Image 1 (cartoon, rainbow, N blue to C red):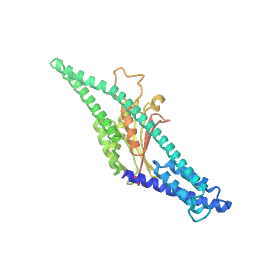
Image 2: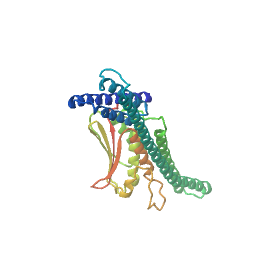
Image 3: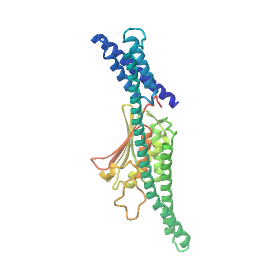
Image 4: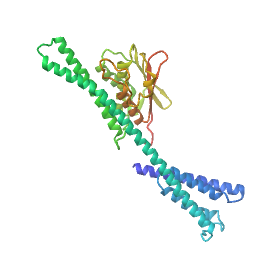
Length: 353
């Protein structure tokens, strides 16, 4: 199916461009009353088609068509094919040379862009691996330490101490489950051949599910919701978008020091739905904000207790999910204090999808 659409797109582009330049050639010939500029106009058409289509076939076909049309309609004797004249043969050879060089140049540029994209992806994966290694070490150590303490000193531990150790194991296990969910989401999206499947999702139902999931983890944290009263349906992978919102909410609870208000606001702008998650906490350092969606950044002032929760992995996953949906995500500090995470999703499915 993908090859079919690529063939159709390249074919339509070639035909439209060539016809446009054919019309220009006729207009120029009638305006200047000479056909000396026509070969150059067709050569430009061949160059553009060779440059912006995949492979060599489209450029070569258009080049041959241009040679035939030049020979038939713009070269004496008119409305007849005549390749015995040296100028006609030279024009045909020049056209083919332009086609081959242009196609080779375009292929080289596309390969370089592909290599650059692969290099960027490998860098992101390396950063993700570094962040995962950093973030998993502490909760695993805590779980192991608590379980060893219970095993070795069970008889001497008070009920409060035992409860504290069990609570630590529970919290770290929950955090690890969330980390695994994030990593599985990234793997699912990055796997070749796996694409986001969007289904119409009612905004109000989406927010209800998010609040339900979030309050299981943070029952004491109140969230203010501001969404339109009218019915809004958005094409999306609802599970992944729920994960994005929950990740950002959890990030605020864990890192927005001094926060007293956490809010979800959704509104429409044109054919897009804009989601904003706001807090009134301490905001984000400029240094961290520059790399906040890349998956990793150095923790220069790590907590004394080696707190396991860093915002790198979760927000990297959020960025990956939103980009896979064709949307945009950003973050900025608010003038009144705190920060706002904002992402946008199209409310209408594109035909190509």
